[in-house]
Length: 330
Image (cartoon, rainbow, N blue to C red; front, side, top):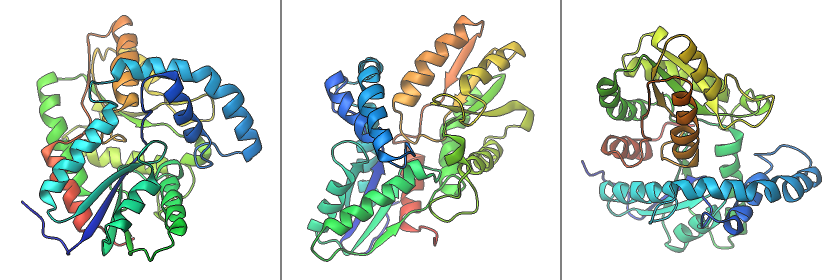
């Protein structure tokens, strides 16, 4: 199906971004931009600057570069490659639209995407953050970046429509089912583990930036129950955990610790699904596919299947087009 559209409409696809190259010299500025975001590290700016510039980046840039190097492709960052493929496929369904991708912490930046669409004199901009859930560190931060970009533009800007969080929308859930059901049927797992991006408890328990009723943790829990229903999983056959955690005071349980507990209970064939990520990236390709897989297998597991992210799956392209063309009122 090809969707009709108003003349001269713009679409801004937003994601986190990636370093320009898997080298410390490129990873360091990316980490600085990411960690200096007040939505990510919530502390006084002076303390945050001392921590980021003096401790975290000097010690983590080389290690992070090594991780990126393990997943890097000939075409570049997997996240950018998948997002570009997603944008191209959407363009085939949305003829006449001007589509720009932009990221929070790497080129092209959010301001670049906003400026490009304004330069094209589009009549309206649909903003589609590629995050199923609403949290300050993702959608909240992107909203602030878009607002700043608009304020910096001297020319008149077109009206904006934000596509809200979609973790509970049928379009997203049906796409996930189209992706996951064949993989699960072929793998025959003993258990399915849903792994979400972790957040500090203070952020995870805060009211969402878009004015919804559920906190980030509650969104993950509610969305998992819905997704399990779409996948035909009984309650005893799935669990929920959080990855990418840093220290204490973060959402529990961790994906790694829960995997080992499942193994201890006799679950030796586990399927991992990461609903937070609509495109494969460092967190899925390195943290789940490499680090946790090695730990699980070395600890006695038989097989660990990580279902790929939606990427440019045809069902997701169709679902995303529906979400974009008919966003719910906010």
